[in-house]
Image 1 (cartoon, helix red, strand yellow):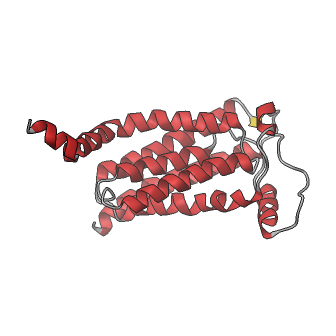
Image 2 (cartoon, helix red, strand yellow):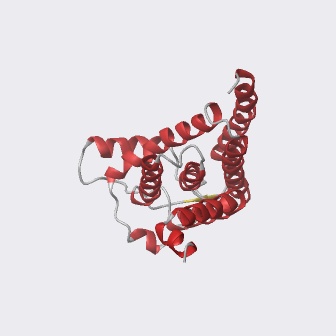
Image 3 (tube, rainbow, N blue to C red):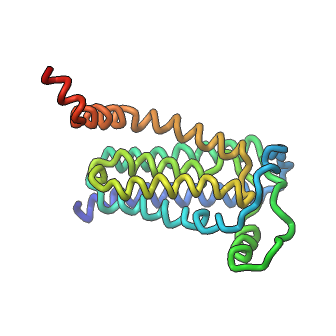
Length: 226
């Protein structure tokens, strides 16, 4: 991939990142009444500080995924599918947060033990407010990243990477609830939106991969020779 192509890709990604961060900062600092969206179901989910590890791994996961498709994947369609997928979800999040300011009241006020994990959670709570959480960007972006990895042509032979991405995505989704960072409603809407955009960007790719896998299966080859 040429340097010029990489620059052309970096510019829109950088511009949107600046736009998103400015909008998010405005939403976090305006004085409005927040609608509490957690429910009694969220209280049934136990707090588990160990999930702070996959929660923080989200930042590396998304950065590495974007970096790979941005700088090393020459497939233009796959690159723009990922970027537009992320942009749609993040823009939707900004719109929802502006129109319907929302928040949670489920974080624990004290911890049963003092460990490096609880200290990491305390750091998270200090730096990230429990407001503007619907839909969960942690969830949406994780599923979007997995969709891009799972359907990437170059990564089809790297089954370990795709399985690892699935496991990490699952752990990140669970972490948002076990750390009380998000409610079930946030997670459900995040997954729903991600599935909808997956159909929009990747449905045909998934169908083609399924057809090829079926053709390679011994059972299918046996049937064709009968």
